[in-house]
Length: 160
Length: 288
Image (cartoon, rainbow over all chains, first blue to last red; front, top):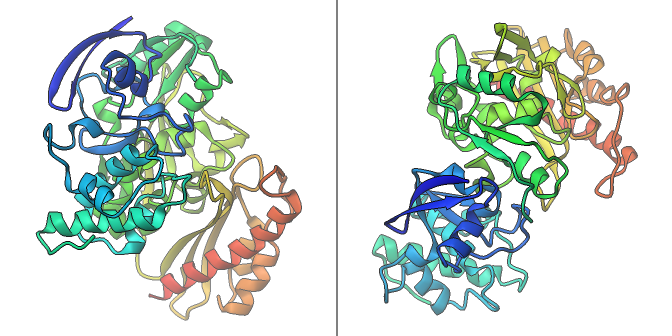
């Protein structure tokens, strides 16, 4: 067993884990943060995207011991309790989801994208989300949702 | 999917990592970004008893610019793709690193990991060969340098000795009259190379080709230079006809892999197409 200290959504957790514990299992099963989903489990679908030290990664392909000392943000920590992040609001307003399974990963990937590029073209949004799969085929509205959030975060007028 | 149990070590230095490798022998595997190793562990294709995580060893990080670019083995693809020194001096490397997998993969995957793993469909081995990069390694017997031409031996097999660690990779800084390109037919889901071709050319002042290096990945068991194409191009005018003729010679003496994504025949045809595209762009860039 290994002892790790990880700051998750601003709160420090010290946990004892088996070294083989994947970060996504650590978040879901040890910390009960089930907003991070397990989809393909092969680092292709992006349902498990979280941020580690501000960068988006796929939590199914990282060991919990590898984030010892790091800061992790999950979908639960994106906005203060009771509030929606502009991306969450955008997905709501633009109908950026159908079943919702891919949504947490989409939003976390999009949050990283907008950090890097606050004013992306539609093409850049699609390219930036290439690591996230939506099997309801809802990409069009996902792009609109990200653009809604980008506009709002820039302080521009927003239209759903 | 959960890997089989293993012991985990996170050494603070390369020397410590080598010590752990010597101590645990065949039981041990080095872990860097983990984006090839962890999927294999989850499928239980590999069940090492010990993982030695070198991803946070400080001396394996960082990009140093000089006569050549020296890049730490644990530097991520994303860091390479966005580095000003790489973009300025060796743009093809940034271009190649910036299109691997997706951004989440690029935030974890490392240069040294990709080269040491030598996946037949990895992108960087082709660029390393075309640019004549040098791979610095450290082991129990000390440090040595492996030339790109010697590195890739067979599928998933390199010239690394069992207890050696890739520490840095050095790339040339391209100047006037030089150009390079990476052209790739990518698998649409995994974005691995079905065929990837890296090309480098140096032109004489009159525009004719002084030197060329071309390497193919994805099509066969290992990344491989294309000597017949290179020889045909050197001394030519480097025009469309010369490039097309040289590209036709690509992949003739290679071993191929066929799978559900692309047959050997298709890959053989695409090697020629992508060699032509890579060379056209490399020459165009060399002409400025």
